[in-house]
Image (spheres, helix red, strand yellow):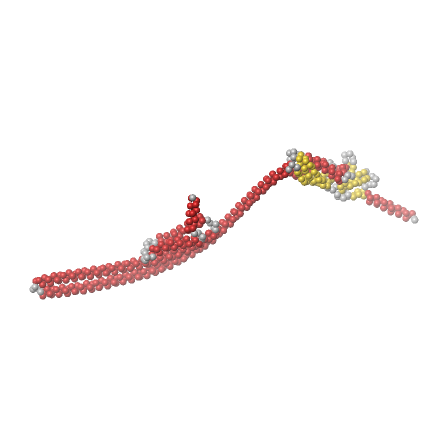
Length: 494
């Protein structure tokens, strides 16, 4: 084997040995741990020097070459650890023994100083040993803080309790290079049920407040619902009233139009009847005058006839008297007979004249009576026609008002008997007043026949009956309401 070949092999072996040494002594550190390098020749980067001049090199998230023989390196865990803490029967400020359970999350601090301090305290120790030391510190401060607070404060302000523990224990733990990530109070209890009693009292108070809140909310809900229902009923009643008023106005206008038409027809008929009555009256008067003139003419003829008969008789008596002038006795008797005949003729003339005058007076009286009868019949016909027209108009108006009232009654279904009676008392006077006003407008009434007075009174009774019928169609029975009202008053009086 040539020398060159041996040299090449030696160089390769040396290089491999050097690379192996480098690979074996190059240390890397991840984010969950710190590499602590100690020895000589540490350099200046990542080196912490304490007050006594001791140096440590801290490597995080990178790598470094550890010089064999001169340097050594170990890993220090930076991961968090959970520590369960329990203090039993610690006296609180109000002398109540309580047991507190908590959980603390601790880890090595993030600064170079904290890591170096933790390395001095825990490097080469197990995590359990580190956690046990931290547990002792936390437990002591937890006991101290429990003694400064009452049970109520511990329960009601756990956040303050936790902050106090973190602040006081954190100072001591920082001297070991540790920091508190979080501190949570899990449970606070006592063996004497003091906390339970406080809870029962608080539960009762909260339940009472909750019941009051629920009652107030229910009250407010019912008030709002009642207000909403009232507004809805008012709106419905207003709408129904508006519809009823519109229908009433329409019906009243229609009734007024029909009333005007009926009155116009009645007036036209009355005028026609009056004209016919006037014509009949004129005919009757003319007939009576003709009869009177005829009677007077006949009486005049009878008088003349009687006078002629009297003259003839007188002449006959005178003739006989002349024939018997010689005889004094006969002449005297003849004169006496003539005087008697003349007296009888005068008596007959007066009787005939009296009969003629009586007949004329009777004819005139009959003519006047006929005229008054025709006039009265014409007036009665006109009054009856006008009354019928106005009664029909009143009936139509009453029906229209009844329909409007019925609409209002449908919108007020919960109307009691007193309100119904009040409505009836408002409507009936209007109907009676309408009939009374029509009869009041008549100056005089001439009654012919046996049904005149009952017919006029029947108009008022019929109108009143129509008003009661209208109220009955609305569900308002006036006799029953009066009976119920009087019965209730009688019961109240007793």
